[in-house]
Every structure is written in C-alpha cells, then in structure tokens.
Length: 262
Image (cartoon, rainbow, N blue to C red; front, side, top):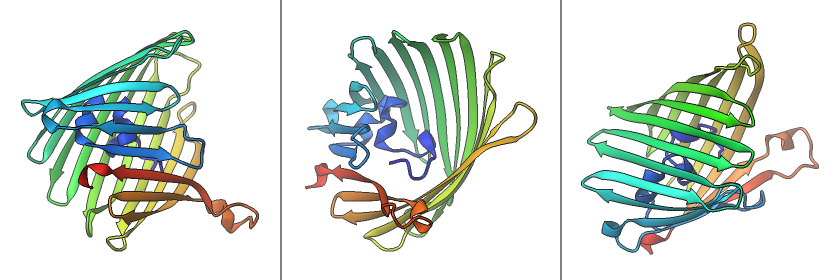
C-alpha cells in the first residue's frame, strides 16, 4: 500500500516496475493489496541467490521480470506481454558502503500510450540522515506529443528501531502549453512502537504552477502495520471515519510476506 505516499523515494516491492534491478533484493517475497480488488500484487521467487530471481506482478497489466546480481551490480529487466499493452523495462544499480545508485529505462508501446521514460536515483546515508535525489525524463507520443522532466529530493531522519521521518519535494514541468507544471511537497513517518507494531503516516500537498503556487489538493493517509513472524499486515485507516460513523474504519488491507526465512 502507498500509505506513506512517497513513491519510489522509499524502497518497496511495488516499485520494481520503475527499478526492476531491485528484484534480486526481495528474495522470495509475496505482496498484495487485499481489500481494493488486488490491482497491485506480485510474487518474487529466488531459489538461489547466485541465479537471481523471477518476478510476476500486476499493476494494472501483467508483468514478468528477472533480476540478478553480477559483480556487485544489480541488473533487472521485465516485459508486459499483454496484447495492445506491450511494455519493456531495464535497470541497473549498485550499492557501495553507505551509498546506492540506480538507473532504469522503460518503454510502453500500447495502442493508446506510446512513450519512454528514463529514471535515475541515488541514495547517500550520513550518520542518521539519508539523502535521496531523483530525476525522471519522459518522452510521450500518444495520445499527446510532449516531454516531461521531474526532479526531486528527499531527506530521511532515522529514528528509534529502523523507524524514520521524511520530508521531500519535487517539481515537474512539461514542454507543452496546455499541461500545468506541478510541485509536490511530501512528509511522513514510520514509527515502530514495538517489534510487532508500526505506525505510518503520509502527507502530500500538490501545487499547480499556472499563476504562482495554486493548491491542487492535500492528502493525509494514516496506517498501522502488524509484524507477525515474516508477515507484514498493513491496514490503511480511513480518516473520514472520524466524521462519518457509517464508513468502515479500514480502507484497505495489504499483505507482505517474506517466505525465504521459513
């Protein structure tokens, strides 16, 4: 689930469509969003570390990928073999002490969505701080012809036992007149209350840049995670329940299982 609303600034199995070289980092992993119709789920299997991992996942379309580590470089590729929605992705990354760099390429040849993107991200940890700059370039030909540049920076502060708080901002601009440039501000936290319970909170404020900073909407997403052995059980809390008693308390439920350790 995207409770933190931080996208690919924060590593998560759901981001392997952006950085397929992360496939070998998630050995024998199963994840899925249960209550919202299983629109985002996947399985990563890695029988032996030296031969890499095979991944199958769905994020609207079916994807099949493979990732392996060769001479400390993580390499991954995948494709979406869906009729009229063909897509390909390739990425390479490397970790070195307290740093990591990733670059990837993605191309869509769908009937109504022809484009390619280049993604770059690096991570540097210094003491209890993690600095993550990222950049994405997109070139689109269908259904409209334009280019997009998006750059941003996140700063994480590590707290307690593997917990963190974060603040990030990015700017996206387009080379076409009728699409508004946007700025996003992100903040949130992941707070371990114990070995079994995590609290999560994500906030996002978007601005359009038509005439100065024009607010486009703010979103706040709370969540709670229970760790039971190798299971992570994520509950997306419905904040509107505070104002309407007829709404359900839980918006959705996510499951994350690392079965390599069983």
